[in-house]
Each structure stands twice: as structure tokens, then as C-alpha cells.
Length: 244
Image (cartoon, rainbow, N blue to C red):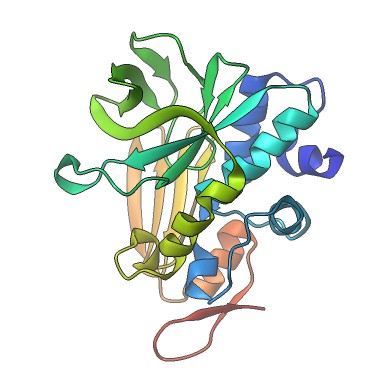
């Protein structure tokens, strides 16, 4: 895991909050494999090769799955929690739609949701929690917990601990189903110290100190390389991207 710590610019003495922040500033949330017909494998050696060795990113199952392994190696107790994401009209997505982490029974950690909290959230507090990413709040909903971001429900968490293998079927659905929002277009996004940078196959969106700019992209492959260090070729007229 020392290579992983080096990848995110942290050390074995880093606090949970520092590890969380450094991960979000270093490792992008991205769905490029779903547009390259590359099967995502939810096994630690495969995730380590992708995120640490090849310096890629991923989506929730990959990023939180690997981050959980790092935290356990550093002595933390980590539970994998399944969530259903709120979509349009506040409709809930399928079970295992998202994965988040409960750390030491006290902190909700999530480095795999794109734009979210920069620091872990208190699992026991039901008050507003201010974060550089916004104002968050947890609310009990029967046996589950709803997570709100700036007053809007984001996802509903189960309390029951899960194993990584239990997320495999929905991970496959996310990669292959036409109904999956990950299939709508390639994208990569990463937190910045004072904002966020996002690249799609059409736009570069940069937010700094609350100021948002959007620029059209003529060459997506060049943009993914320039801003995220990911080498891609656009191989055919349908826009499928292939990694070099």
C-alpha cells in the first residue's frame, strides 16, 4: 500500500480526513472503461493495478473498494455499505447502485461519488455538517440512512455491512445497460483545492472559487491526456475510445 499512499501524496501517519482529501485531489472519478468494452473486475489486485500502477481512476465500486483496502491496511475498521442513488424526480436507483464506507463505526467516507464531501462525515450526527463541498446532513429513514447535500437527497444507505463481491452484478449492469447513466458518455472529474475539473467528450468544465466556466472540446482524447494523464484514441466514427 505504500505505492498507493505515494499515488495520493499521503503517508501512514496521515489522518482519515487527510487520506480522504488527498485521494479526491489525486484520483479521478471516471467511467472510461465502460466506453472501451473493458470489463471492470472487483478484485483488489485488478483495482490496484488500475488505480495505483496505471494511475487511473474509476467509479464507486473501484474507488471506494480500493480505498477501503488502504484504510484496513492502516488499521481502520471498514464496512462496505450499499446505497440506492436518488435520480430524477427523487426516484431511487436499484439496490447496490452505489458503494460507500463506514469507517471505525464513526465516519461516512466516500471517495467514489464525484462531486461530494471533501472530508468524511460524522455517521452519528443528524445536524448539518459544513464541508468545502457544501452542507451535508444524514437522516434516519426506517432502517436506512438518507444523505443530503445542500438540502437535496443524494442516496439512501443500508446499515448492513456488505462484501465487495456482492456489488459485482450491479457493477456489471452499470457497465452494460443502456439505462445506466455511465453509458451516456465518457467523463472524468477530480476535485481541486478550490473547485473541480470535469472533462467529457464534449465539454471542459472548470469551477474555481465558485466561478464556473464551460468550454467546448474538439479533441476529447487530447483533453483526457492533458487534464488527467490518460492516453486514449478515438478509434471509430461512433466515438468509442480506446486506451493506448
